[in-house]
Length: 117
Image (cartoon, rainbow, N blue to C red; front, side, top):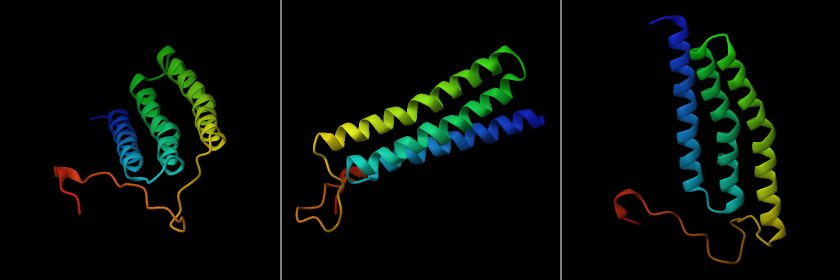
């Protein structure tokens, strides 16, 4: 295994790990505003690691340049989209959940296997 292949594997593995933990974060968070944070992390860090791994695998050339352009487009549009979604939710009347709220806590997702405690 060459150094480039090893670096590609590490970057892709790290990107996949960030994407997986972000997905778990979206499932575990109690409200919309909390869920948007791990989704945004995946948009920035996870995609950057995966695209970096693909660039290393592609080597110098046209494909690497196209991947850099895709990365630049994602870095410009993804945070703006996250901000727009959050602002729209705020204007719609949604408010972040806190433990001090008078209402009941938001429902938690069921545990694996269907058993809830």
